[in-house]
Image 1: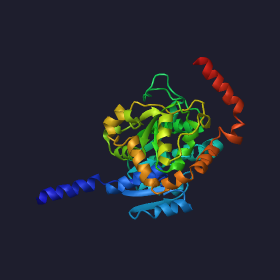
Image 2 (image 1 turned 90 degrees about the vertical axis):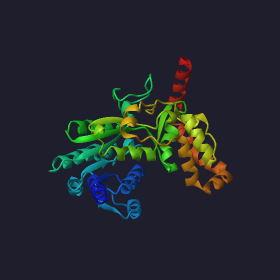
Image 3 (image 1 turned 180 degrees about the vertical axis):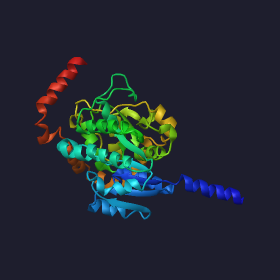
Image 4 (image 1 turned 135 degrees about the horizontal axis):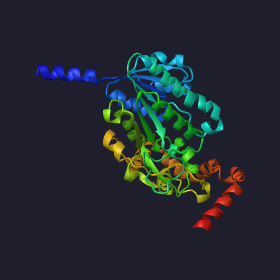
Length: 348
């Protein structure tokens, strides 16, 4: 019994890792932190110092926090040196990446270059986990699902930055794993706003619960089969649907009901179904589906669901007002929208 206990203690020490997370206090980062702490790893969080992040950091007792700017290699170089694994989540996403692509480039691309340089200048071998996106493929494929071998065709600053960062990581000769995420489902409804209107309602989309996305990240940190691989991370067959099916279910739970079709864009978008057989075989992360998300959403909303029902017209009006394709904002794109609708009818 003594030898068995000694072996278990020794194994626990061997498996324990020192892990640095950039962009740690975003939605995905928080889930990754939770999972790493449950596995008793040493976790260091790197992020921008602001009121929101300061408040969030206080929720965790067993983490180290390093405040800084990813554009300044000196603010995190020591943290990279002191950790075995770097999980790189820090990235400017739409709409900010499209409003100010120059700043986004400095943070996304130059920031990633800094991470790579800090790893390469370290004396010890490190592993870099980078979260990329299905957006690198561009608009829908004619023959779904998306495969890892499909050519990348970035269509905006965000997806272009992801492609460049992937390339920088591959040519660096650093031990790495690149995870191209599908549509990550967060319980924070505010996070749905960008997709709510920009994804056409007849568009294919593959969802991945944020807990599953975090599990994929954590399961890649020491998995030898994931070494130097690029993997597609989605929820699997049960999470493949059309955008309208997803929106209907979510808005029904919220108590608002489906929004009119003209609240959504009809322009091509880069969500699609994915072939996740390889990633699931290696990482074993697919545990939740849309029904699990709906239940989580119900719990998160709690008593607020009753207030939404009471003030449903006001909530509905507020949601519609946010759409860039309705009201005063829509007038700016009215001509373009009509042209696209005519083209769609002529080819149907």
